[in-house]
Length: 290
Length: 123
Image (tube, rainbow over all chains, first blue to last red; front, side, top):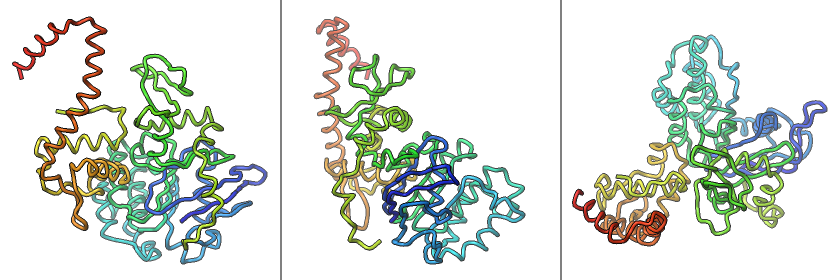
C-alpha cells in the first residue's frame, strides 16, 4: 500500500530523513515511534503528499503522493497534531458537511456515533470547545472518512485519561478492516496494545518495522532481581530490573514498548541487524498490483 | 478468580486466559457465541490482530471453534478442556515453582501436606 525506497528529505540544508525504506500493508495499525526531531511528522507529510521527497521514492496505491491526484487524495486522510485548520468559527458538524463529500466512503452515521461516544458537542463552534474536545471531533471526522490510508500525528496528545482509553477502543471499533493506519507517537503508553506492527524511526534509517509477534520471538522482556549477563538493556523498576535480552529459547513475554524503544536507542545497530527484513523480500519487486 | 494472571505474559495469552476464566464461570456458555474479534478488541482497546492470535491459540486447543460467517463459539466441552489445560500447566510449571520454594524455605513435606489439608478444609 505504501512503499518507500531510499527516501531522503531536507528542510533547506538540514537533512531530516535519509535513505528511508519501508513498506506498509493494509489492515494494520502501525505505531511510528522516534525521538523528537527524527522526522516522524515529515514522514507522514511525505506519505500524505504534503511534502516532496528530496531524493528516493514514495509510492502510495502505486501513485506518487506529491502529484496530489484527486483519486489519491480521496483515499488518504492525514490528521495533523496541531489543529489550526479546524480551530475556526464553525462546528465540527459543519466541518464534516463541507469536507465529507471529498471522501467517497465518508460515513455520516459513523461520524455521529463517534461524536456521541466521545461526548463532543457537534454543533458548538470549535473555537468555544476545549482543545481536547476539538481534537476528539477531528478524530471522529478522520475515522468517518473511511480512507484506505489513515495517518495520525500524535492523536492522543491533549486527550484526558478517560479519552485516551476511549480513543484506543474507538480506533479498534471504527477503523475499517482494510485501512492501513499509521499513528506517530512519543507517548507509547497511550497506545500500548493498540499499535502493532511497531516502526522505530531514526533520521538515518528505519531501525525496526516488526510485528509484536516477531519482536517477542526475537527479544525477551523479563523482570529480574539482578541484571543477568545476557541482558543488553535494563532499567530499574519497583520489582527489580526490567531487562531486554535476545530470546534464545526463553519463551514468550509481553513486549514492553518503552523498554523496547529505549533498548533500540542504545543499541541501534544491533536492533537494526536483528530486525533486518529478509534480503530476498526487499530485492524482489512486488508483482501484485497495489 | 484469576487462575493464571501474569502481567508479563504476552497480551494474546492474557486475553486467552481471561476467555478461559469466563468459560469456567459460565459467562461464556458452552456451545454459545463469544464476542467477535473486533468486539473483543474494542472492549479491551487491543489491536484486532492480537485478539486474532488469542482466538487462533484457543482454536488450536479446541476450547473455541469457528463457524464460518457466524463467529466464534465456546466448544461443547470447553470447560473440560480449559481445566485440562490448566491442570497440565499446574502440574508441569507451577508445581515446580512451589517445590522450589518449599525446598528454599526448608518446609517439611509432612508440614506442607498437613497445611494443605487445612487449607482445603476451609475452601
